[in-house]
Length: 174
Image (cartoon, rainbow, N blue to C red; front, side):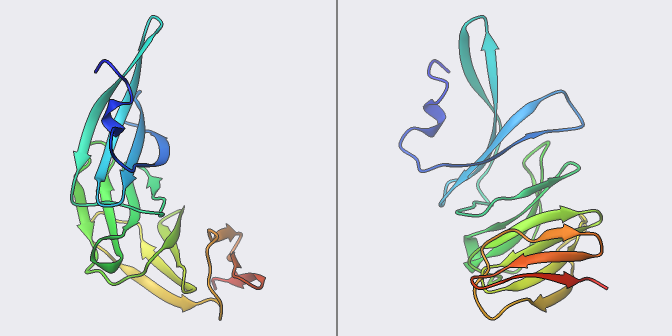
């Protein structure tokens, strides 16, 4: 493509992060936007010229104000579709692996922590999700605060730091 940024023309895209896969020496930029789907692009430099190449595109999953997390070759996130729908995508192909039924929340701060994914919704619900390609498997749900939460949960030892609108607390996961 002549203009390396032409893929964003006329669209409201949100850059979600730069991921490098373990399966190829490829660095991709994963992008999504309100009702725009999700796509991966590769930046290519030939001499002094930069171009982009679309690696994959997925119109089933779109994110707005939510950042996914990469764990192995799987991307876990929350789509704004269906009033908040958790999803898992294959970072290599962009294929949707699974989605939850929906109505899971307006926003979620998501982190990978070993064999689990922690999703803290803006209404202060911490959802512990099994990090699997088999399907949406919430293991536990906890109410963490009486006020909204916007910051990412921070795993610390055998606990997790939770910041709500009023306090910062260390919660035990045992």
